[in-house]
Image 1 (cartoon, rainbow, N blue to C red):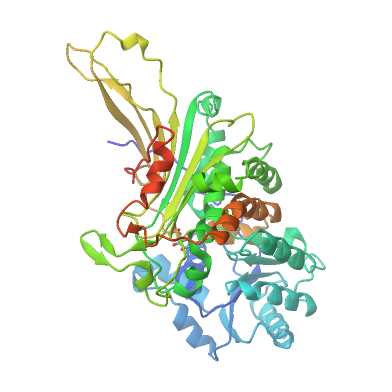
Image 2: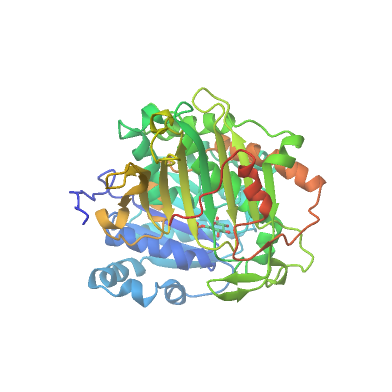
Amino acid sequence: MVQKLETALTPPHNRTADPCVIVIFGASGDLTKRKLIPAVLNLQNGGFLPRNLAVVGVARTQMSHAQFRDEVKPEDKCLSSEPMRAAWGALSERIFYFAADATKPESFSGLAEFLKKTDSQVGTPGNYLFYLSVSPNFFAPIIQNLGKSGLAGEENGRWRRVIIEKPFGHDLPSAVELNRTIRSVIGENQIFRIDHYLGKETVQNLMVFRFGNGMFEPIWNRNYIDHVQITVAEELGVEGRGPYYDMAGAMRDMVPNHIAQLISLVGMEPPISFSADAVRDEQVKLLNSIEPLSPEDVLHQAVRGQYGPGEIDGKKVPGYRQEEKVPPESNTETFVALRLLVDNWRWAGVPFYARTGKRLPKRMTQIVIQFKHAPAMLFQHTSVDRLTTNRLYIHIQPKEGISLRFGAKVPGPVLTMGTVEMDFDYVDYFGKVPSTGYETLLYDAMIGDATLFQRADMVQGGWSMVQPVLDVWKALPPRNYPNYPAGTWGPPEADELLRRDGRHWENSGS
Ligand code: BG6
């Protein structure tokens, strides 16, 4: 039986967001309806938003405000409670739509006019949060247009901020170039590069867990930790996103961003404060301490795979090359596993293994910290022949929590050892809070806190980590795809990667 703790769920900064207009470019896309509007609604319902706040959707399709409101109205199940219906009532009348082609500079004078009108209608003071939910090739043109039209200028105490979705570049040089272009228009303090993994409570909790408790930090290093495993497994395939995914592949889609965030949060040194730059300085330092893989290393320490037809949960699923809008000869990887070393005082010699893939047996994101074994001498004349592996599991999703596996004496006259687990589950302690994962990120952008957003050097650090692998893979196209059936844990080489080191992947967890 879990005992509930007293918790105070108050707004983290004890203040409502600044009055502003959230302007969503690419508003007719899936993200607006599935995540952004429900997140704004949850914030509204939680009392995090001021009365003078508006949302303006921008896209090419001609639509009235009423049609747009209908389009983005959350599903009935979100609006099943009276408070949520009231919140929607209050919010929906401040949702507007502006039809424009955001790649054309001439659209922006009309947009500027419209936003001015919205300011006087809603009482917003000219603070604009631009959300670029568009294809990456539009990031730079839109920001340049914001600059030229004066919409990016911060004057008289009003702010202008831009949230940029991923993917940020498609390799290191393109990310550097994109940063350069954007920075020629707006300042780093105006740029909020989003990585939705940082919106997950369990990911944010990594810092609190490590630095808010006295008992883990002393053993969080190479003296006690044998290795770290990071798994981001998905059961789903590409879900109609073939054209994007086929260009990106598992490496670009997941590793320089989501997995780099997880590695940096697990490995970073304690920041001197929770201020955005203090935290991000440490994350960057960690990313920059990852040993660059030589071309020779890539052959042994990076594994790629593509799924063929298979079965998940008793259901037959097609191979990647048979997926909708995927070329039948595609050589895009849908699975990646890496062995990385962090060359600093804390981590020297401790491998960080990371893997991610589509169509794996189950959805499971978890970090496993495996501790070194206790000396076994003590047990030599007992019936204990093997000591339990001590592991800390940080469950990110779908299970959310932390568990610790260790050995305990099995009751009885003979000394035998069993493996037991202490388990903390978020839901047991804190209940289920409706969340899309975007609430904190939007709220933080509205109060100007960039801690959970990626700074230019972090994005570049993530790309630097994977660039040697991308280079070798480009030069040596794969010859054996598909090399894992859907519903399995990737190609055999991924298991071999750990077996060579006398280790194995932890597939149980969530
Ligand atoms: C996105 C990727 O960034 O993250 C998708 O583009 C992937 O391919 C998704 O499915 C995974 O996110 P989550 O929150 O479901 O783990």
